[in-house]
Image (cartoon, rainbow over all chains, first blue to last red; front, side, top):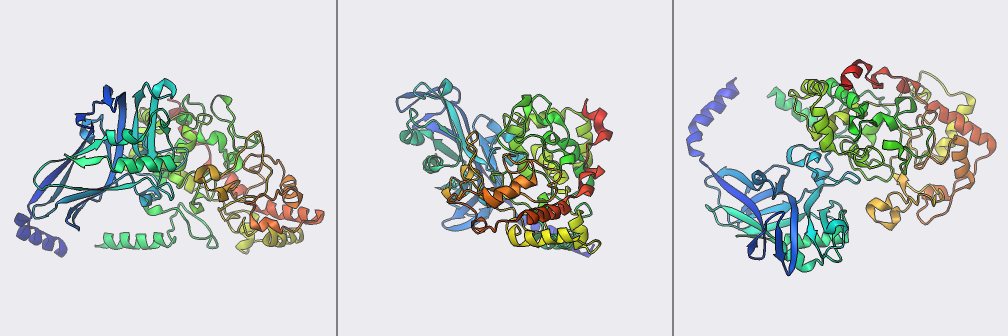
Length: 225
Length: 341
């Protein structure tokens, strides 16, 4: 009881001073200079490609002032699905006096979360982002069509995951930002297709050398608009 | 404040594996549990829900196969009479369904260790096209339309939201309560009975020849090993290497417990042996010296006929009929009519 009163006094004294502010982080995809349209033909490096799925996890979001972490988000992970408007942006509430000029986050779910058993919300296995034949989250999923792709129905599938050495695909992404402005993080898929030849590489659905290679490509594909 | 102290103590106790729960009864000579109960605290309603789910064929795409189809309580939750287990539309898989008990002491699941946590294990058979050929999203959708589950989820979680997480946690809870610790061996350990002469001789052979992999009192180290079985060329199953891609894992399979062998034949990952005699014959003179052969088997001392008999006599003291016939683990007959709705 006494403790509760102390809390109350504390709140009354200090509450007016704690002013919060929000930062909005949104995600979108582009191919070079043009916006990527899902389920439509996009001309990507002289190939006509239809992207039907881009889904990925981000986790461990930090805001930093130079090299000092000034805001830490503790949610286990956010599932960004570019076909679902409401998943494409995240709001973080931080104290007004928090300074930052960088954001960093992990693309994917880290290995310690992988060892803790089933999780809910964005990490619930009903989201289709968890492998069933071998434990592990799919950190990044991209699927689509290209006539150059020799797979069945010309459908390519990249399911990039893996949390154990030597095929750990989780990537740390670090970008500069400006305070007081919306942050739009762009995934430039041209960067990925520059390095992948869809006539040769079109189905990756397990942790391997190739999935690590693609994970490294994805890491370099993010920038802030 | 009291609450905080409780949570603190709980975390401390569970992190040392000292968590005791009235639904988790095991003897003091058992080691610490591996399962982290702080993320899934056992509760009678959740265990009950898990039990109903375990016996419900709703997990398969045509509602014909339940977990219990291949993990029958009468066979220590394994599948007898078939070397390889069969699933949906009478399709035959590539492995022998393992017995389920003492799962709280196990870190890796499946014969090749493909699954890293008990909570996640059910996803594998649900999605396998030869087992249940379903997906967890659709299972959740199907059970969300059943009034029985709305009721049971409400009792368990305080609201009737049905998610993949809750479904898998409840299934894990029921499986965690499948504890086998009441065999003759256990009664001897507790000082209630004694081995007869043959069993005692068999026990001594076991300690010398088997215990390093089938470590008592769980009768498995639950590690992975190559026990020298010749490769079955109709299956070409190389075990753990398919998961880890490391050559040193070629032909390694999860070491099974020796408890309840009397109920859970056939033996080995592909069910190739029907009798314990065949198994021991393999160790006596059938071991193939692959590169990855378990070092324990390189100098395995051949057992004489009378020693084989003694060893098998001992192994029978590990059969736990109290576990096999435990009503709490059986088909939840009281929900039968509601399950069919």
